[in-house]
Image (tube, rainbow, N blue to C red; front, top):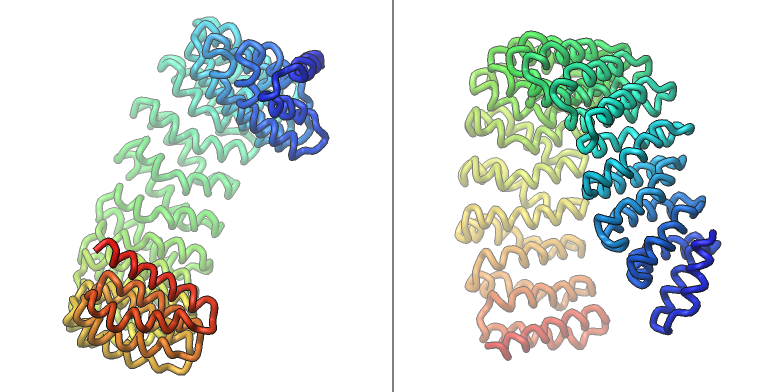
Length: 597
């Protein structure tokens, strides 16, 4: 506590401008957690006021002795110290930051330890080589030999920083220590060692990689705790990238095959998640001979979670294989998964299955995939239907629009009236893309009426998307087509008895105006908006003011003066405060345009 007492005395004698710093230092020991937290987050301010030498001699020792029991305060301290090198006098004094962080590496709370390790790695990666040997490596060894498992857990994350700077004797010692951590009595330590093995292995020389590291890896893959084994799966991909292809096939491939049949579903789940990366590590030939059977097993696993993970990788995995192999091995599983008892499996499959079309080619897509698409489009679970709809363009590129429209369009029309609004929303968002692919004629026959129908949907998000959809269609097919097929039907709806639908029409008019141009806006859209200025509902009237403001850049100056301004002047006297506010805003916008022109 001496360091802090000295801090208190010296800060009480500082000049007036530094008074807030004295307050911050005083708050470091306050009973109120929020005040301590506030002070810790301003450590850099305190350090700047104290200067580099006093920060090293007084502030850092105090922080090392600080036995705060609040995890939030400790977490903030661990984070702050990671960027503290400039405040202690640069790299030559970086080692003074290690003691408080070493203490934080031993606390019980995981997130504090993780942040302390992250800060130590950041500092260590900047430290000079001789300082690493003198200060950082001893710290790693102390933590690795710590009585509490928390210290040993933290040590595992520091080896990849310490190892490159060590002498040959020290390197051998560090490899031995890491091997011991991988056989620690506490599963949490072995988990940490398994998680960090890839990072440590990346710094180890090739000769020791094949011997020491692979021995450590094999021990972890045979651990009796599934939580350790599943982390070793991640190590497979990381180590695979470091090894030569033949070593990868000899050491990594057998492990993956064994893991794909592991008794724990969590390990199998991790293999299913990582399999694509593992395929990249072992290369194409072993993938075909050994990993395809393993993947097929995972697609047919008893546990739904494993099937979900495997189904989500169907397209990625198929891309590695030839179309023939994909049709022979993967497609039968895909057919089974499309009618899986778990809706989440079907949803995972639906989110990626469309990507298989370019892989399999036109004939296989028409014969094999289209029936699966159709069955998923009619699935009772909305997310499954949603995932298929959002990826239709990938199929269109392969089979062409004629076949797509014959087979899938009836299902799309059915989904446009789906009882789940998110499904309807997905269809609306897909319509402009579908329209551009189908062409004007086909669109008018089949989908035109739907687009108008959505403007009167019960859900606001659907009505809003429908208005945006009309704008995008007008952009796609041009103002003449819109004048014929959109504008008249939109303007007919302006007399709808429900004010929310009238509001939607106002929104649609506002969006269409820039696309339609000045002439149509003045002759067709503006009169309708002006009529709505006398609507009995205040919400409609203030939206009229907003729409009129959006018309200012579109219509001529003469129209603004003759029609827009008088309407806004009248609305500016409205009894409703919001109507007056938006009307005055629009009038100010007109005045601003007049001044600039």
